[in-house]
Length: 302
Image 1 (spheres, rainbow, N blue to C red):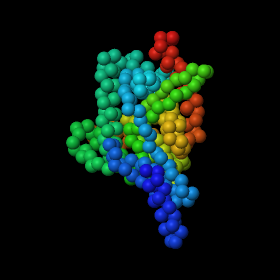
Image 2 (tube, rainbow, N blue to C red):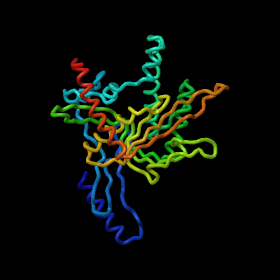
Image 3 (cartoon, helix red, strand yellow):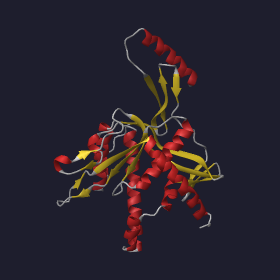
Image 4 (spheres, helix red, strand yellow):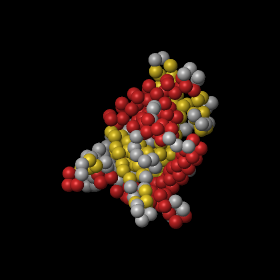
């Protein structure tokens, strides 16, 4: 494949030498199990190639608290960050019936899984009919995603991509793994970013990727965007870079939680938050504190 891309690049360089076309790179796609995925970007200047793909181990098994990768345990990212205290969630659980709470959380988890799957299908170019689903909230989420896909110029490279890595902390090696919803191109749309102030003084935050960027994205159907979400995105960015050698510009979270108004009609309530690669570094460091704590809990040390 590399030889083929090199040959194509040489021909492109000859073409561009004798033309006025201002072209910096070509992206090659292959049809794979999950749809179209970028396999390489060939820059016509410098004859360089980028391989965005990740070769996954054949044995990649998901268990409750960990992934079993070639027989070796890797703690799940979403479980590791659970060591952080969540006062709001704990207070809600304390004042609610346990069985009702568990039922609600299970329903919301299933709803989130369904939403993720349909967004994946949309990213792959498949047509999704909202009328096939009973939940009004889901129908509105699909409409929201259509807006974001168009206005944020989403161009997926990898979807539902497994990521894993090893981290040495105080002489001990810890292994961690997770699944990124979206890895690809993204352009900020200021109207979707958080706003501050009221009335005429209400101003949206400045976009961090106005000219487009390579990012990791996450879909959330939670009531808001919480700090521990960025631990997840930060470590995903770090693992992806170590697995591929390609630097990521940052990450974004699309949070949706449509609610019915007084007339019972669901309104498209959503928001996008962004963080640059540099801003995510602190969350990677925080994850290095969470890993030993979670490992100690699982090994009955605490």
